[in-house]
Length: 127
Image (cartoon, rainbow, N blue to C red; front, side, top):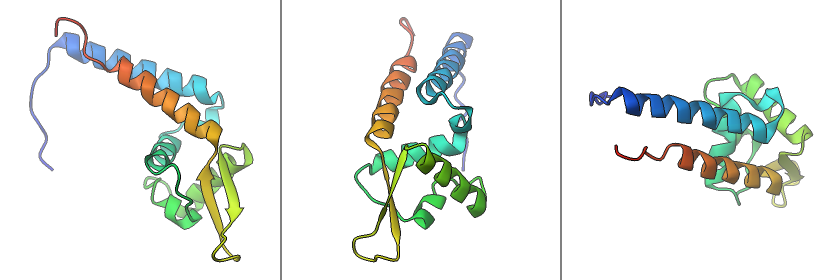
């Protein structure tokens, strides 16, 4: 992958760092629990949000957390299920399987986070 080499002003760089920090802090405020203050949860929840109405198999969701082992991903999923952020139900087509969906609360939190972050990253006035 070729890295773009465009140089930006220090003002824009500072704006980015402040926005990133602010966005991270807001994530922490929304979830409150330090367990979820982890990039793997951010990856999982935001990727699930892209298809929020879809019901996933656990094994499908492991791929949404590529930086951790399958065992760790399973532990993360269970923690989110135990706290009610993810909903686990029996698969209607295969009663031996379970499907995972986002809770309405999680969907609302992710949308609040996205709206906040989009605003935080808007370019500063006067370039």
